[in-house]
Length: 263
Length: 318
Image 1 (cartoon, chains in turn yellow, red):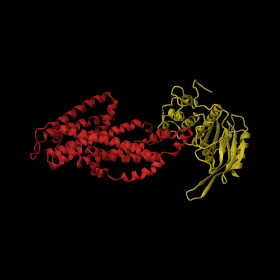
Image 2 (cartoon, chains in turn red, green):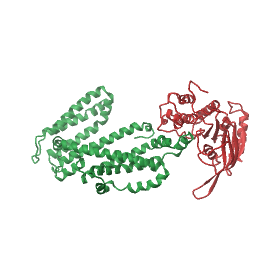
Image 3 (cartoon, helix red, strand yellow):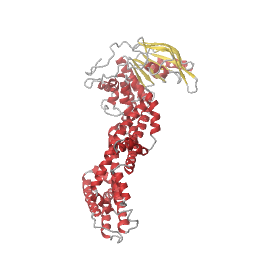
Image 4 (cartoon, helix red, strand yellow):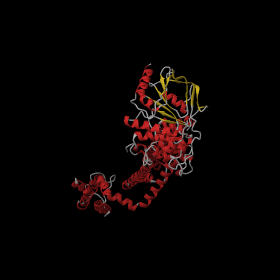
């Protein structure tokens, strides 16, 4: 797996790991006026190691809530989520998260932003580290010393990806990672994420609003509905990669998903 | 355009020459007791030499030319005001001489009284630095505690809110009793006036940081202390500096007031003492020293900030 002479540090030995399982997961929020809002109800699913899963559905259907539960940022009100059989209780570098807005640290250079996880975990080695490898991977050679406001939104999102990937997470959670990008950058980034995913074999869970994006990228699509917030249907995408957005199978899938989402 | 630039380059030199000519040709007002000082004319001559050199240097160095051209109107304006002041005091005696001494008399103070002025300045600076540095450090520590830890916030935030807005000078009598030396007492109240804005801006700087910065850090495996050192503090640094500037400004005020009230030596003490003996030339000399001292300290602070916050350039205009 080492490329360009960089020894990969902090790497998870068993690349086959990264399975997720939700057992009866519910999340109830209490709003300011005391009303209870059911954000997720009785959710059950399994995600296989190295699988690319998209969560799709109208806003308010609990996609982001689910992602935050998997990340460990929030705790489920009932039920549990397992990563490789172990219950998720708090955050961990094993579950990386990329927001819609890149959220790079503006006071750190691109290099330091990408190295953040390694340094935070005290596994950063100045002479032998993967930061340069990841800068190459996302095509930002020459921008190491730039600050985040010097680079474009697409570049920043790629840095955010690299920052999460450098920890070799078992699962990468993507919360509308391309939502803020223009159409052209978006399509490029979709291919880039697919390329990185194929190379790293990380389990991916992506929240998106875009049906085409979900079909283009995922192995399976979880179509979610609000009230009650749950997975309405799981759709297998059995199309060869790279996928053709104009093929009839693609269009049929799109129509099927749109039909389900209208319910 | 080129002609315009030349005009701006020559402006300070021109105004200075005019000021010198007016000073030399117009006779002094006969009511004013004038000793044969040469300070003002010497100052103008030195300025003429400096400006001439600058004009020559500007021909070869575009960077100096740009800065000098930009500042030339300001410099010329300042010399113009000085010239006017010299005219309405020494030359025409339009305002009471006791309260508004002519420039030569003020400059004379620097030559006659420089030993005491220097002693006072050093005393003030020592007090200022002791107070500002200890108050700044205490402010950052308090601010981090309040902004970072919920438990400490519970106890410390009300304390900061209660003590902070009380003017530091009110503590002078108490401080003089509590501290063994008057230096310690005045250092304490200077520190106190630095402490409040720094701790307030540090804690609010940390609290106003986006929550997602910390959430990302957690998913990257960052322990708490690392989030504090690499996210909370650097993220709050712009705000911390705002606190520093507010703190230093109120430290100046506290310092001068403290010196006027109880502390022996120091520039504030000097100004107050000279005012009591009605020697206003010395008062103005003292004020000039205070002004130069404060603006120098602020300039150094700005430089430090620019160095530490290079990442902000382009994010925020200043």
